[in-house]
Image 1: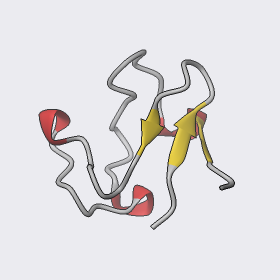
Image 2 (image 1 turned 60 degrees about the horizontal axis):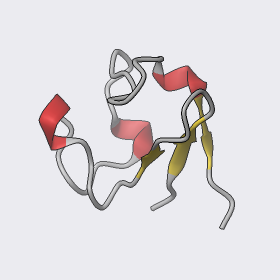
Image 3 (image 1 turned 45 degrees about the vertical axis):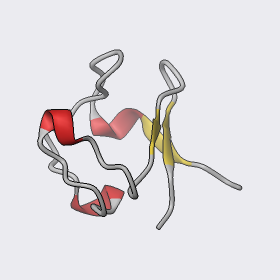
Length: 54
């Protein structure tokens, strides 16, 4: 699964880790993260993330 980076602060959403502190279980692809989820570091919306090109 692809990782996504917050363009505001650089936080990387890794689907293997998810964001369990904010209700996103490990193994959750970015597409399946709820639309109202926000960056756990800076609080911007999911629309402020872009795919990481590795």
